[in-house]
Amino acid sequence: MIDLESARARVLDGCVALAPVRVPLAEACGLVLAEVVEADQLLPPFANTAVDGYAVRAVDVAGASEDAPARLAVVETLAAGAASSRVLGAGEAMRIMTGAPIPAGADAVVMVEDTDAAAHGEVVRIRRPVNPGDAVRPAGDDVRPGDRLFVPGDVLSPAHVGVLASLGRLDVLAHPRPRVGVISTGDELVEGPIPLQPGQIRDSNRITLLALVEAAGATGIDLGLVRDDEMAIRAAFVAAAAGCDAIISSGGVSMGEFDFVKRVLDEVGRMNWMQVAIRPAKPLAFGTIDGTPVFGLPGNPVSSMVSFELFARPGLRRLAGHHPDELVRRTVTAVAGEPLRRSSDGKTHFVRVVADNVDGSYVVRSAGGQGSHQLAVMAAANALVVLPDGDGAAAGDEVAVLLLG
Ligand code: AMP
Ligand code: MG
Image (cartoon, rainbow, N blue to C red):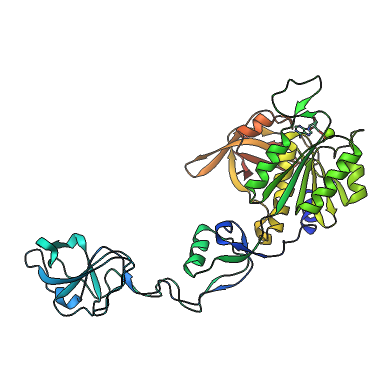
């Protein structure tokens, strides 16, 4: 058996960040940036008003009060998008809407709530003084030319793509979303509502793994259900390696007599067949076909999910260009709400649990049976407790937890 960290190191060694491409901003959120973004302009590009109200000279309203409002002549109305061509003079105001440029001569904006407009609106009464600069958003208040805004490795968020759009950018250089082919193998598998023949089960791994791929920020490509047939398996993997950035298969990596996955992968790829000191998900095949990473995950539904979490997700995140420290989900500390017992077997156990946030700290309880076929228990769980080799945890013990999703 190989320990978890060593197995994961082998996986990460076989995964390198995909070459950056130009991506339209609308598709870039969640991707990892591959360029330095330096501002070449001011944001906002011009001084503008933060409120709806009246642009004024602060000096003209210095003595204003409820009892003695300042009276100013309203000389123009400025909507957002409309710039005034005149200079505001003494005793004048301009009605102005949020985002409109501050007219020359004005140095503050009085919010509409502090004013009363007379009939026909040609005079406005200002009931409060303002200081120069009040409600004015200066040009460059957010971004100035030469600012280094974003650097390679930054993960593009909705705000990042918004800033890029503000700078006039249509696209950005980023690592592409990995395209990940997902294959199920096994003669016992069928899909859909057709009645099961003796010995048949329905394929659940493919739809689950496709969902996990998408949740990891990659694009899942459904490569279907492949029979335990050497030719069919070879054709599926060779085509997948040509058309995808990574391949995930499930089934056929334990030593069943009719599992041709091993024979085929050894023939077309360079594979590591591992027995990892974990439970569930002990068997793991990882390698490359013509440089394309291949994850051969175990067939048992919970095992394939745990194996995805521990190996495939970090590998896919590396392909996507994420920082080395951001590949593996961090554990958090929780308290066992009940005994989580196990026996010593040289393996780290991943226990399916429900983690409840009680006053800011997590309390975990078993989600149910811990068999690697019990997928409904996995559905009920929202976390995995990492139990090191030993006899497990007593109620009240601190445990390390991977919060899923
Ligand atoms: P294997 O790794 O092929 O020996 O399969 C181990 C167990 O997982 C067997 O009980 C299989 O029937 C089951 N299994 C394999 N592939 C799938 C799948 N795609 N969906 C659901 N169960 C599967
Ligand atoms: Mg099988």
